[in-house]
Length: 224
Image 1 (spheres, rainbow, N blue to C red):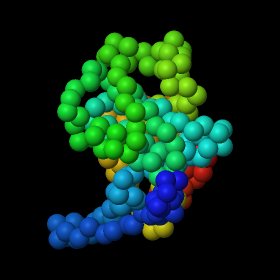
Image 2 (cartoon, one colour):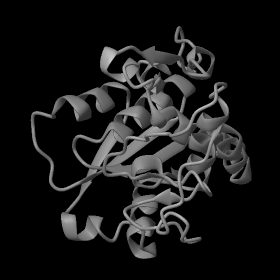
Image 3 (tube, rainbow, N blue to C red):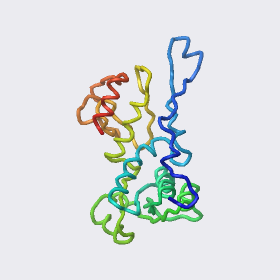
Image 4 (cartoon, helix red, strand yellow):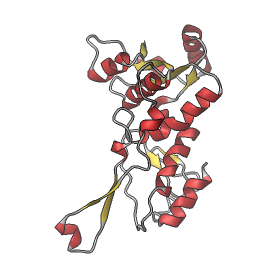
């Protein structure tokens, strides 16, 4: 931990608040809408970023890595969050950025470097091959031993962290509406991270409805 800085884990707000959204148009039809405020988990590692990083950071520490290496575009929130997490938890961080370098840095990359992240760039053709052994080998030769986080931080440990969200919901519900960007979302039936394709058990493709709280909590436990 950096001298004088607080421990990131101790400042994380979990479970995140569940806040009712009041609207007379909803009340007219007896609809109750609750918002899971994951944006309040941490000011610098908000939303699903902490959930996706949490167990990866534990794994990196357990495997005695001192440096994190990850990937993202020039405006990546994952890059920002990894830089912040590394700053507070005393990891060195390397951000592999898609495309060529541009100066001055945009706000996202300036923030990352301000939190100590070293930036390196891959042309777009090479970036598409970022998971191939020869590309990773060159990066690790350049930066030394690193715990490698995939683009967006999405891997099995990230799924484990995100799946815990459902068990935090202590009220009964009928539907979960899960917003997603380019990173996709989770199948609440099995916890599979969906990226525009059906989960391998095909239940999403068959239009299976989102389960209630008890079934969803069981799905969360199944991917731990």
